[in-house]
Image (cartoon, rainbow over all chains, first blue to last red; front, side, top):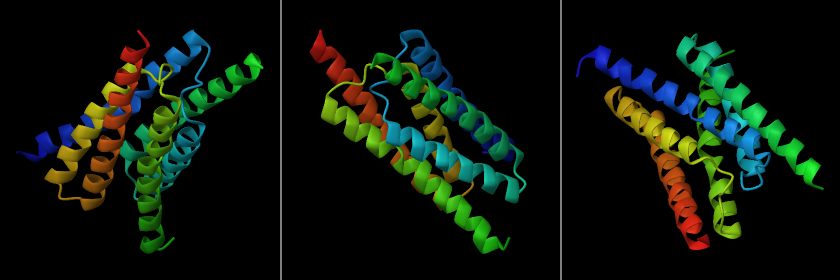
Length: 90
Length: 90
C-alpha cells in the first residue's frame, strides 16, 4: 500500500468519525428528545475531544485539530439539546 | 510543554474518547432501549473506526490501533443492542 493510500484511510476515518455526529444532532433536534443518549458518554467524549484538540495543537497536526474542533462543536450542541429538551419535559 | 506532557494529552484523549462509550452501552442494556440514539451515527461511526484501525495498523501505531479496536467493540454492542431492543418493541 502506498503512503497516499494510507493517508487516504486516515482522512476517510477522520471525516467519518466527525460527520457521524451530524445525524445524531439532526435526530435530536427533530424528535426534541435525547433521553436514551447517555449524559456521561457525552461529557466524557467532549472532555476527550478537548484533549485531542490540545494534543493536535501541540504536535501541530491540522487534521487532528480540525476534525476534533468540528466533533467538539457537534457534540456540544447534542449535549445542550439533550439538557434543553429534558428540562422542557418536566 | 515537554514531550512527555504532550504524549500525556494524547493518551488521556484516547482513553476518554474510548471509555466514553461504556456508559452508553450500560445505559442501553439497563433501559433496554436506544430509540433516541441515531442509527446513521452508529453506522457511520463504526465505519470510521474501522478506517482508523486500518490506518493505525498501516502506520504501526499501537495507541490508535488499541483505542479504536475497543471503540469498535463498544459501538458494535451498542448498535446490536439498539437493533435488538427496537425489534422487541414491535
